[in-house]
Length: 307
View 1 (spheres, rainbow, N blue to C red):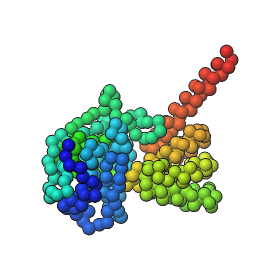
View 2: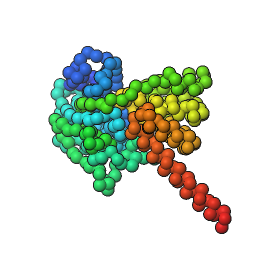
View 3: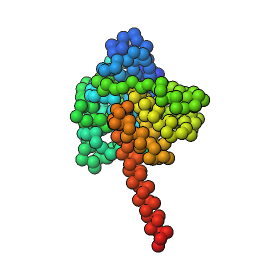
View 4: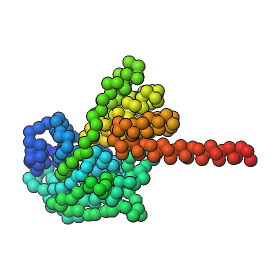
């Protein structure tokens, strides 16, 4: 095992400073901390169609929420990864490392996701799951237009900090507009929802741990009034914080409580193309599955009572 360095030491290293200048010039940057990785992006005026981001993986780090999961990438048309290599604070160049990254992915997007989130657990027995080992200086597509890599995870196999450049082509999507739908809420509820939305913009899906009081307030809103707003919020721009997943999870909470009402809103939104189809279809499938399970449970309960 090599020396232990902190992220700040890595970020201030000569090679990272040089790489950031090449990628972003002198523009202001935002550092996004994920469960086991760091993502660096333009803070302002990030392009809508083609973007570049720098990923820094700590020793044994990974890009998904957990090492044995893959994340979905609904916002991406296609994306390429360029493995630069290992980083040490005192060095001006990258360390070239063989077999440094595991590219874990599924070859199609029509994979059953977790019941509570739009992510897929790594399952080596699944015939659509693949793993490829990559080395420094390798370039490869992590997401393809045919759906390959839609669910993936990049895993650092080494005890070194490792840098990867991501080049993404994004899908065009509708911009969210709350002007009319927010009027369904009372004035005090509008203030709470706006605070919740801003919290998601700041913290992404970490809002459920960092802003739990806001979450608990929104959960108590009327289902018919809040669901259209939450669906509209699925159009939020993904900056790497999994913002849409935060609203996805909230819709699912309401759907588990009032299944039919939320399904009605989701089907209407899908027909009207009010939000990305991927999230809407995923939510509809999950709530339909839940409805079938509940129906089966109630049927079994009636049988037991009759007996």
